[in-house]
Image 1 (cartoon, rainbow, N blue to C red):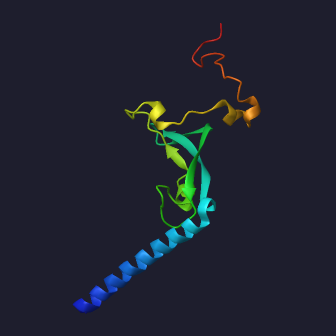
Image 2 (cartoon, rainbow, N blue to C red; image 1 turned 135 degrees about the vertical axis):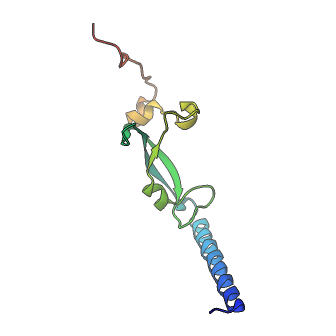
Image 3 (tube, rainbow, N blue to C red; image 1 turned 120 degrees about the vertical axis):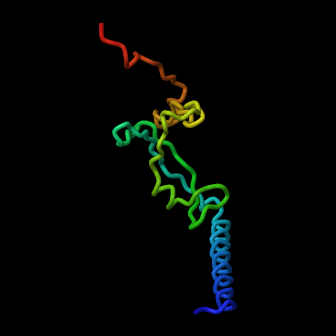
Length: 131
C-alpha cells in the first residue's frame, strides 16, 4: 500500500512533468515562429441515411495547424488535424450553409490569380430535364 505522502509526491511529480512538457512544447513552437505553423487539406463530407459518408471531392478546404504535441494559440496540432482530415457537415443542422462553409473563390479552382477576374456562371440546373 502506498502512503499518503508518497502518493502526494507522485501526483505532484506528474503535474510538474506535464507543465514542463507543455511549456517546453510552447517554447519550441514560439522559437520556430512562422515555421511552426502549417496548413492541412480538409475534405468535407455528409452522413447518409444508410450509414455511409458522401465525400465532396471539389470542396477541399485548408486548415491552419501548429507543428507541436499540444494545441497552442487557438490551433490544433497538425498530427491531430491530419488524423481527422474529413469533416462531416450535417444536413439537418439549423445553421445556414454560409456559417459552416467558407466561400470558394474562382482562383481556387483556376490555379492562380491570372484567371481570378473570370466569374463562374450557372449553365443549367441539375434537376432540369432535357427538352
